Amino acid sequence: MTLQQLMSPVRRALDDYHMIEEGDRVAVGISGGKDSLTLLAALAGLKRFYPATFELYAVTVDLGFGIQDFDQISRMCSELEVPYIKVDTDIGKIVFDERKESNPCALCAKMRKGALNTKMKELGCNKVAYAHHKDDIVVTMLMSLIFEGRFHTFQPVTYLDRMDMTVIRPLMYLQEADVIGFVNKNKLPVAKSACPADGYTKRKYAEDLLKRLNHENPGVRERMFTAVINGLYPPKRNR
Image 1 (cartoon, rainbow, N blue to C red):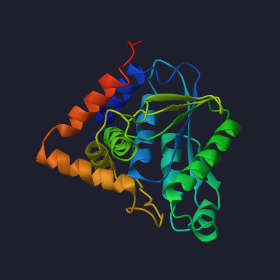
Image 2 (cartoon, rainbow, N blue to C red):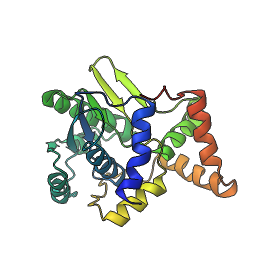
Image 3 (cartoon, rainbow, N blue to C red):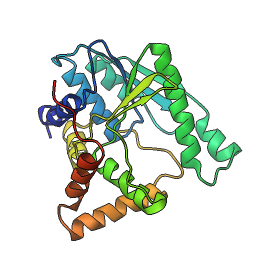
Image 4 (cartoon, rainbow, N blue to C red):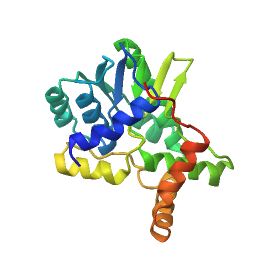
């Protein structure tokens, strides 16, 4: 997938849900993974000609495991002319060594988002872009059905009144396979997660379930996504 091919569905998401408006200051949460780096590349490309002028920042919350190397990501941001900010924390130590959480993901996510939101406020950002793609949206819907008994998933746009911040998800129309193709073709500097819980979560169970369902019933992922969008979050009128 080329950058031009990547930007098309991202532009569609921005327009369908009015994700970015004139004068916005948008932070991209950079975990070091393939999804967030793909989102950064797409928004940096669109920034050059998008009808609404906006500022873009890349922010990493380092959990403190000491394994991930963010130097190449910093160089990528420099090439894209996007300011890169790394927030150093001891979240990993607190969650796994001090608290010894049996369900580490919930606390880790809460602390990570708190650190990210604090830095965003310092930068004067009013929006944060998360790199949740189509598969993430469907997987979250499955998790809600299986474990909570409700039909729910990520919203394309979410206003957080306590933080006076808006969350946007511009990758919502891309499949994970599209992201993988873009990362491989463009050799993005992915810094693999160092989380000890990686691969042993309820989310991983739902991801594997979706892959199996889609293998046995080709096209079911797309039909589930269509059901989510039509049922929960129909697009707004274009600009």
